[in-house]
Image (tube, rainbow, N blue to C red):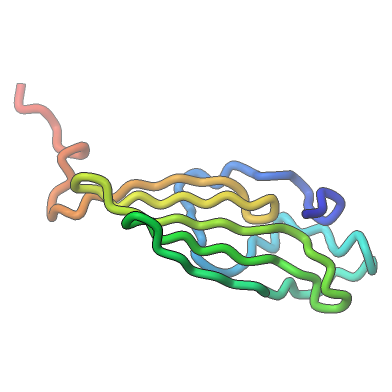
Length: 112
């Protein structure tokens, strides 16, 4: 992973978790070949570990195959919620939780 290729390491992305793709707004350009071109995805792997889906891949420079960052995305179901996390030097860090029920109990207002 290369901190010379990104504007900010692990920017806070709130609840935006990317299963694939790249956050190019944070990409300065390749510190190795000094080109600012597209970032490719390589070495993508998906594994299922104890009910948790883990997707990992590398962001690499299109021109010289320099590894810009390693991306990790997780998905799991805990109780009545789908839990998402993302951790990547380029794309940032984020967490999200969505209810699998039609009405999210966390969003309902108390009656009194």
